[in-house]
Length: 520
Figure 1: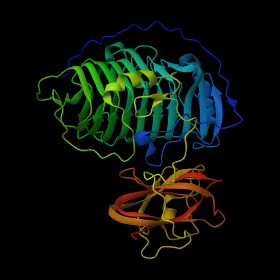
Figure 2 (figure 1 turned 180 degrees about the vertical axis):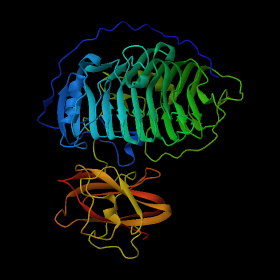
Figure 3 (figure 1 turned 90 degrees about the vertical axis):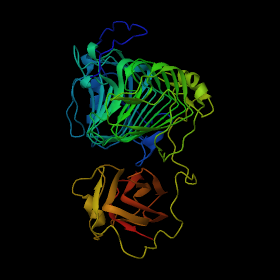
């Protein structure tokens, strides 16, 4: 049984007055996007673009945020919500609509997709009010502060999590945020950044997490191991008791973070989790890596880390620290490219870049903070990490057996009257459409199947609607090919159980009649 330990706060946070404010949502003449582009695992599974390409509105209350979500044409219509001011219980009400499902005690991103929430102007503070993401995909949260969210006491919000994700969440990028509490569980607080119940393809970058009993978790119990593919980089964890993070199953990539004053334990890999832990700086802390409070082991691959004044417990029945001489006990393959700062400069780089209202500065991998690109850019088609389709005539259909016939199908969203299964039924008169202009559809098999070529056929009358797409190995997140327009795409043969067509750009609503797959 874990014994409670008092949280040592380095600085007392002042009492905050709650102000009821009126929010006005204004439509902007041009669409805006979060600065920079997603990194880490959020770039996989089709990528994370949030509300890029959609309308931009301004909100100064939680009610206005909900109104912006509920005012869209449908739940997948892209939108960027620029937030300024303090969002709290006094100015956050539930709003009804066909494109939303909101709640008064939290900012609710539920059963929706393609949304960016970004702090602007003098800053955005979510005071005692958490952000809840549920059954949603393609979400960006950037440049905001979330503080003092409680699960007990008054007021309560979001189960005590500053940012919480659960139930089939995909592709979330949380960037340049400040997440903080004023104590541990005994004071009413829970986690700062929690993921559970099948949450995948998430990146937390350039953020500050501090003054809390629990930094965050992946998986709510030893049986909740459906989560994973999460990247943590260039974050500052400061004055945290434990869970920086707690990993249950899945794969995580943890690099270039600065950990200071971890009071009980740090990265807790358990229940079969695998973590690649690169070039982090740990200081003035205890048990910063290992398997703790369970006998269900987790694993790690370590390299380039610095351990400065770190103490380690003796191994026991439910304690398996990685130190005092941390060694790798697994290997983890990372599917995306990234640039590592040397661990020795991580404290300085993270101090200069991490947190809200830091100008969204990032590192260039050479220990030098810099300003990001103003908007996300599409991958260079010549970039070897984003392979292009084979330059064969896209109108020349492949020969051989169409492996999609008789296979399964699913996807991210579908327009009324369409079906995922229509893309693999051999009938060009039936089709699938996403709920908006973008979305994904997958073909899947019960056992590994070798695929080297696909043929994307658009329905009659909608030829040319697909402007850009990606083909993704669902199991690994690897991008197999990118292209524009329908037709044939080839790539090196790969054995997989599920291949996803991610439509990233279209004119109008695309209609995919057939998503054919071939061995060669």
